[in-house]
Image (tube, rainbow, N blue to C red; front, side, top):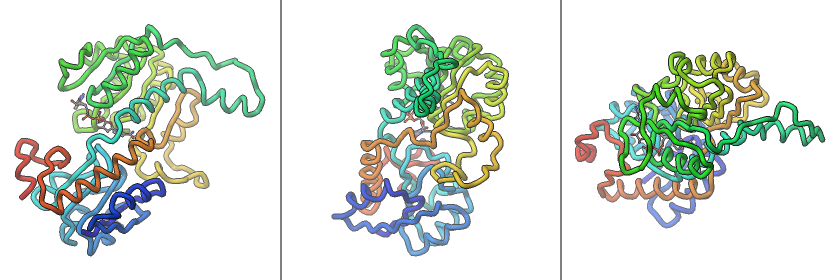
Length: 337
Ligand code: NAI
C-alpha cells in the first residue's frame, strides 16, 4: 500500500519510519499540505495521510477519488477539515481518536499558569537582568471557579488537574456524562460564574463561535479564556473586543480560527497580514502557541502507531469502527461498503 504523507515535519518522520519498517506500507513524505493546488501529488497512491490544516473539502475529496485514493488517514482526532459527506461511499476516513489527552490537558494548564502568573513577561525581563515585579501580579487559582466546556477525554483530565489546584469545576457538555462526577450547568450559568473558561469540545456547526459577543457579555469581569480545542470555537473579533474592554482579563490560545495559513510554519521574516492575530499577539495578556498542545513524545508515538495500525487494518479488510469516521454515524457498517 502506497501512502502520500502530507504536511510532513521532521518530528513526524522517525516515528512513522519506525512503525512501517516491517510492513507492506510504503510512505512518501511531502512537506506541502494537501489542498486543491497539491491534490495531484496523490496520483498513484492508495492512501493519503494528513493533519489538522490539510484541506479536504469536496473538491479535494472528489479529486482524490478520481485519482484512485481509497483511504484518508488522519494523524489527529478532529476531522472538521474533511468533508466526510463527500467521502461517504467513496473513500474511507480513519482518525486517531486519542493520542494523549494528558498532553493537551497539561498544555491547557500550562497556558493558564503562564498567562495568569505572567511567566512569559518574567522570562523576557530576567533575560535582560530586569528584576522589577511591576505588572506581574496574578491571582491564586485555589478557590477560583473554572468552566470546562466539553467533558470528553481531554476536558475531564483538565477538570481533574484543576481540582488538584483546589479549583471549583463547573462543566457544560451537550451530552453530560453522569459517571464523571462533574457538576454540570447550562452555559449562561457557566459564563456568569467562571473565573477561567477552558474549551474542550469539538468544532461543529453547533459549537462554532460558542464564544461570541453575546457570551462575552455574560462573563465575569477578568475571566481568563483558554482554547486548546479548535480556533473556530471563538469569534476572534469578540475575543479582541472583550480583551479591549477588559471583560476578558487574559487569553491562552493554542488554536486560532485562521491558523491554517500560518501555524506550523516559520513566518518570522514575513509581514503577517492577519490584523486580528497581530492585535492578539501584541497584547501583554495573551499567549499564542502554534497548535502544539499535542506535542509530546508519548503523543507522537501513539499517533504513528495508531495511524499505521489503521492503514494495516484497512489493507487487511479488518473492521475498525472505533477509528473510522463515518458520515452516517448510525450506520457504521455502511462505511465498509
Ligand atoms: P472527546 O470526543 O473525547 O470529547 C469531546 C466532548 O465534547 C464530548 O464529551 C462531547 O459530548 C462534547 N461535545 C460535543 N458537542 C458539543 C457541544 N455542542 N457542546 C458542548 N460539548 C460538546 O474529544 P477530546 O479527545 O477530549 O478532544 C476535544 C477536542 O480537543 C477535539 O475535538 C480537538 O478539536 C481538540 N484537540 C486539540 C489538540 C491540540 O493539539 N490543540 C489535540 C487533540 C485534540
